[in-house]
View 1 (cartoon, rainbow over the protein chains, first blue to last red):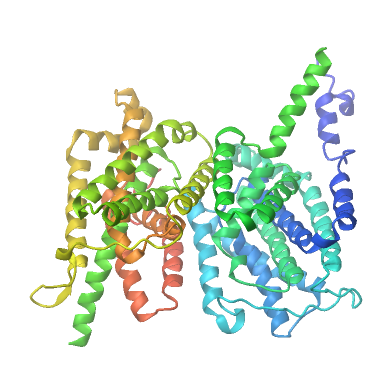
View 2 (spheres, one colour):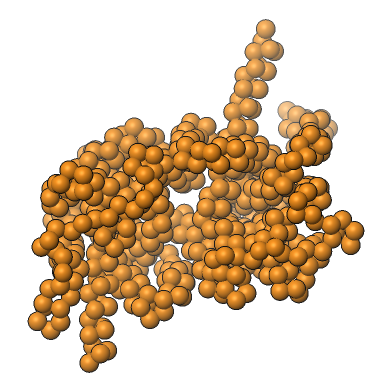
Length: 338
Length: 291
């Protein structure tokens, strides 16, 4: 006997599907915290802006890796593309307006993502890993070589960025504007990503990650979906890169390298991938630890980071949020039993 | 005849670099082909072995040959322990977990070596018989480069014979082709994995020692040259000794020539070539198609 046809919305499975995109009670919490930090730590706003950029970058990777299951080692290529777009335009005095600058950064990164995605996503496994790595290395070499435009190894210092809306100026000493600006950009991008992953498109991405052959069999355009997702992810990574260039007012080769690609991967895994808020938790944990530990004990930090990665890969594949969820579930079950 | 001697010196220099590349990468290719494991820590084993070899020579005045043997054995034992304890758990895990685990391992190696030995470069002092130039009749060239080419050819021949003509080589080839079938005809795949892994890491250690003279040896070695090792494996094809050999020589000579004629854009060219090649033949230049 099936009751689904009678009252579809009443069936528990249907209800779960309908309600899964609803705003949870705790979801405004990160944003309230971010605003509270603005008032609580006025001396750390520069670092805070960089933290927000890291969250945005990890969020873009989450879309490709966590939802669509595209394993990439070269996501910093798009971050760098965005950063250099904003940086070169500003440094050579072509375009200094910040908001349109971010749109341009997104467009450039999206074009690179689309072009590389169209060819790279034919492959899988080790070949894909190698190709993403090589694409990033290629861009890094190109940026290093075109020193007349990109500043080469030294990068482009003290970028002139126009005030936002012609009013709010970026002060290099007090990062109040930068912090709020980064927070606003992050919020807009987050709402977009959240809407996207709960849409039918996002559902089909999860399907492709879980079982690509079954998605082929039910007639889903797998390759087109993957390329679209990769392009969107690249665009958001480009925005993150552009934002980074604007709030820190410089660009250098570190935007493009394996170090940044590895760091964003670690941030996402640390927080937990495929769950939107993993990027937030991971970025806060990683950036705060690295900011205070790495400055004084860089070697110990690297050792600890390595051990942490080994432990996560072996025992805690869902990251901090996964551990928290497991605790929550165990605790919740115990409570309902007693 | 300036051009002629140029070609000879490029060939000799490139071949000697390619031999080192081959000695390091062959283990990576076989373990990746055999176990399907993305081992990004292979460069760390090469670095570890290089340190054992160079420190044994510099601090305890051990001879070059003995130091090489020591580096091989120590690295093989350490990697076998790691394989038994940790790698084993991840053979069936997703690629992402393997990537993370091995990146973590690389960080641990880099940090430990920085803490224990220090961040500075460790120079390799060659024994007197390998220094200087050697007269080859048509030209004279660095003795060490010629030595590396000879050693590389000997090792490649030995590996090829071992791979094609011995019982264990046949077992490895069978397992690369079809693991389940190999298991069901009674090949102890677990033991085979450990042995191959330890041997491959030992080879990487030798490569680390041989290459320390011109690649340098500092804690960043594990990450610096990883892309090259991976390119060689991807171009040569997984689980293919001969493929890796030709790919190493190709990339060694190409890199050497490009560094000479195009000192700035050479690396760019190699990356672009690798991308095109992998798009054309995803299984590598010498690899067999998996389908």
